[in-house]
Image 1 (cartoon, rainbow, N blue to C red):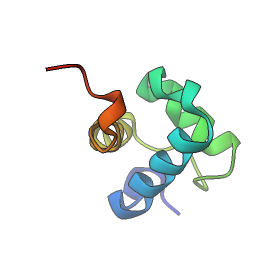
Image 2: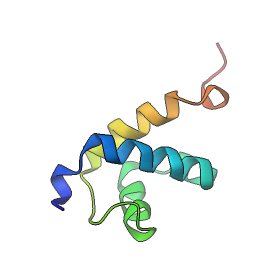
Image 3: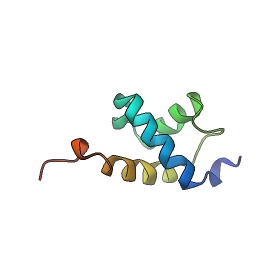
Image 4: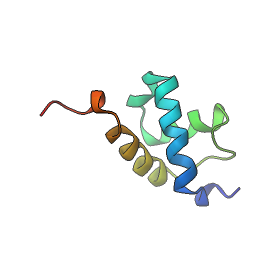
Length: 70
Protein backbone atom coordinates (compact mmCIF):
# COMPACT_ATOMS: atom_id res chain seq x y z
CA UNK A 1 0.00 0.00 0.00
CA UNK A 2 1.39 3.37 -0.99
CA UNK A 3 1.56 5.60 2.07
CA UNK A 4 0.54 8.70 0.08
CA UNK A 5 -2.54 6.98 -1.36
CA UNK A 6 -4.22 5.49 1.69
CA UNK A 7 -7.91 5.90 0.90
CA UNK A 8 -9.74 8.37 3.13
CA UNK A 9 -12.45 5.73 3.46
CA UNK A 10 -9.98 3.46 5.25
CA UNK A 11 -8.27 6.14 7.31
CA UNK A 12 -11.41 7.72 8.77
CA UNK A 13 -12.74 4.50 10.38
CA UNK A 14 -9.26 3.76 11.72
CA UNK A 15 -9.05 7.16 13.45
CA UNK A 16 -12.60 6.82 14.79
CA UNK A 17 -11.75 3.44 16.29
CA UNK A 18 -8.48 4.75 17.70
CA UNK A 19 -10.29 7.65 19.39
CA UNK A 20 -12.90 5.33 20.87
CA UNK A 21 -10.35 2.82 22.18
CA UNK A 22 -7.68 5.30 23.25
CA UNK A 23 -9.31 8.68 23.99
CA UNK A 24 -5.96 10.15 25.00
CA UNK A 25 -4.97 10.07 21.30
CA UNK A 26 -7.62 12.71 20.58
CA UNK A 27 -5.17 15.51 21.35
CA UNK A 28 -2.30 14.19 19.22
CA UNK A 29 -0.96 16.19 16.30
CA UNK A 30 -1.26 14.66 12.79
CA UNK A 31 2.40 13.60 12.69
CA UNK A 32 1.96 11.85 16.04
CA UNK A 33 -1.25 10.17 14.87
CA UNK A 34 0.59 8.87 11.79
CA UNK A 35 3.06 7.03 14.01
CA UNK A 36 0.40 5.72 16.39
CA UNK A 37 -1.78 4.42 13.54
CA UNK A 38 1.21 2.67 11.98
CA UNK A 39 2.59 1.30 15.26
CA UNK A 40 -0.76 -0.15 16.32
CA UNK A 41 -1.34 -1.72 12.92
CA UNK A 42 -4.24 0.46 11.76
CA UNK A 43 -2.37 1.25 8.53
CA UNK A 44 0.31 -0.67 6.65
CA UNK A 45 2.61 2.31 6.13
CA UNK A 46 2.98 5.85 7.38
CA UNK A 47 0.25 8.12 6.02
CA UNK A 48 0.51 11.69 4.75
CA UNK A 49 -0.08 14.22 7.54
CA UNK A 50 -2.58 16.20 5.46
CA UNK A 51 -4.76 13.10 5.06
CA UNK A 52 -4.56 12.41 8.78
CA UNK A 53 -5.39 16.01 9.66
CA UNK A 54 -8.48 15.94 7.42
CA UNK A 55 -9.67 12.57 8.76
CA UNK A 56 -9.03 13.62 12.37
CA UNK A 57 -11.06 16.81 11.88
CA UNK A 58 -14.00 14.80 10.55
CA UNK A 59 -13.67 12.18 13.30
CA UNK A 60 -13.53 14.82 16.02
CA UNK A 61 -16.69 16.43 14.67
CA UNK A 62 -18.53 13.11 14.93
CA UNK A 63 -18.55 13.09 18.71
CA UNK A 64 -20.87 15.56 20.36
CA UNK A 65 -19.15 15.30 23.74
CA UNK A 66 -15.88 16.46 22.12
CA UNK A 67 -17.34 19.55 20.49
CA UNK A 68 -16.83 22.88 22.22
CA UNK A 69 -19.81 24.25 24.08
CA UNK A 70 -21.89 26.65 22.02
